[in-house]
Image: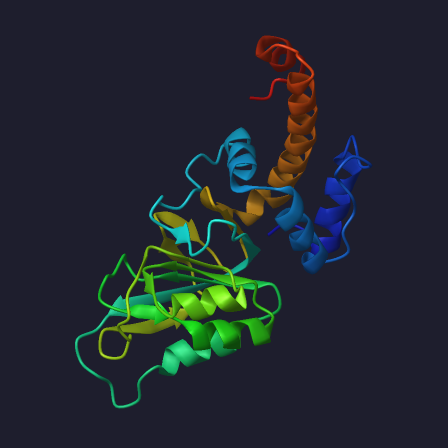
Length: 244
């Protein structure tokens, strides 16, 4: 990625036209992701991605949050899991290593090639991930221990639920490597954002452009909403703000 974090952040902030309205500076990823969680949503980020020419960044609609109010945002730590057909002598080796490698603000993003044979994620992995500072998990496959995960409030996205274990059915073969999850390429360190509408991936090459556009559009949408509530016609506010 071109430039360091400080340089990219400064470039973004010098282009902000309305820094006092819903937008403020951030000092690090934690503050940025907290802002995104509170102010942004998947649809507005998807629109921002469209605006910079990245129109295929939304995961398949089958990847859903365990709870509709769940929001996840962080930097992807991609994991590749494949189906296996025998119980290894030492199960879970790479799975354990992948979870233990998680860092502050990471999101565990796992491709299982849409497997329905196993559950790669559950309560104990959620507990371990949270203790490492991770912000959630996105699994293109099944998970289990749904009640326990919901009770602990850890953000998890999945294609379905099942009680079956991964041992002898699925195994992690690589982590912190490029993968395809939900039909979208995901590279280490890319920002992922998910809510009730789905999950989007922000390529690092356009990260600051997308963030700028998304925060700015939220400001415009808020103004549009206020004027519509006050009685303005949709045509009037669209012609004024160009937002729909």
